[in-house]
Length: 259
Image 1 (cartoon, one colour):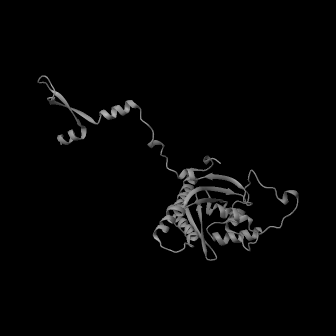
Image 2 (cartoon, helix red, strand yellow; image 1 turned 180 degrees about the horizontal axis):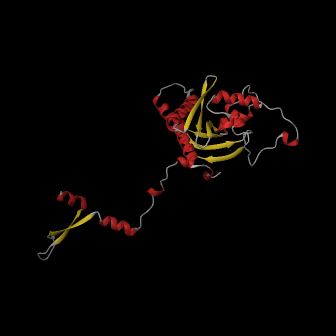
């Protein structure tokens, strides 16, 4: 999907989230590894998420963007809430997102399932996989609508209600060898089918184009001439008669003499 589908405010928030992910998943992890002498690093899986959430708190939150923390057993997650464009965001590794709908043994909805089945319950994907329901065969659902509503309230508490009609974006990322190789904001429907996808990783790269533009030759010559000045009154060593010659001095030296 093209980036013109989103507002400037939404694009700005997505970029900030992307930068928070890049720093937390790459730079912060590399720094951690360089500065510790642990025999093993089993904590890395948790540290990455902690760093990302901390960077989001430090760079994304402002007067119109709220960070909502919620508990899942001993784990604490966060939802970014943009009250201007009425969007919410969560951050998830792409591999983790791909596994969520495949787990049919959950006793409680995954928080992403809950957000998609509440905020995005009316979203429709252009391409979707056929289900038994399309052939008139009713499938047993893993969770009821009431299950999702109850879980939504547990996550958001009084921060948002389902009737506020916010949309939820999942910001997914991929990391290889502590380097970010992919990050996207994905709007999914309740079946986890893609409605819209915005690539963020290209927005994070600095534009070095202006640093490699070659100037026209006549401008280069003009600029070179501006670095020297002409001073009369010096007799050339090889002159055949007494006459004034010129001395070419670097401009900054002449200016020094004039001070």
